[in-house]
Length: 283
Ligand code: GUN
Image 1 (tube, helix red, strand yellow):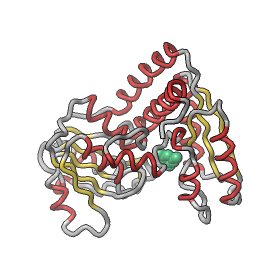
Image 2 (tube, rainbow, N blue to C red):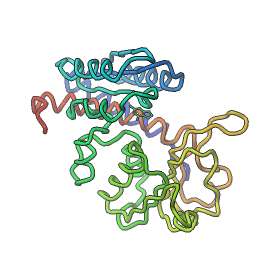
Image 3 (cartoon, helix red, strand yellow):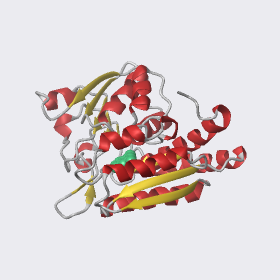
């Protein structure tokens, strides 16, 4: 079975659009981009386009590549204090030399639609999440939509990043999976991966995952965005080689990627609703 993230994201965006219309709210997202990395610019453009589609207002703050951490913090503080802004997203990675941790920590937790603030990560790990990081939450949505059983299953995550691997582990643990996180120092990586009922790859190495690493019938989720030798977009998983062995598998492109943006839209609507019912004082 091919897990069609594109189709799931389209469905979720349509549902969200209706919910936003019914709510009478006009949620607003602010993006902050520092420098001119083409990939980051493309992602931010896609996020603004998705906002327009579902009825979320968006503004983009663009800072030069040589902006100081202080300048970025100033921009974030202004957005925190702006009552018309519900969600704030600082596009990562920031240019070298900027203090990413200080910037993430500066975002008001109630507007942290990326879910990277320690408050949000802490709540996720304690089992009562408010905003979860968009990519792993998008993976959970795909698993739910396709009714892939999670409780009691062995989930193996390859990659321990703060935006994917670690929150993915917390989300799967919250859904009662037995979770293993693997990384570059893991011994017998292939043996760990072969144990997985649900295998999540977030390594960033083109076609690294071959059929010998996958248990027959496993669900394989590919979070990688890489380029192959011909410069074409591909995931961490050798899709053609693995698809016959997996029970279910996400393609790249058209798998996890579109879900990240759909989840960002859902988080932004959530931020707008929270503000309405709770005056943004959820902490
Ligand atoms: N860069 C790559 N993925 C993401 C993401 O989900 N959020 C932000 N802010 N930056 C990213």
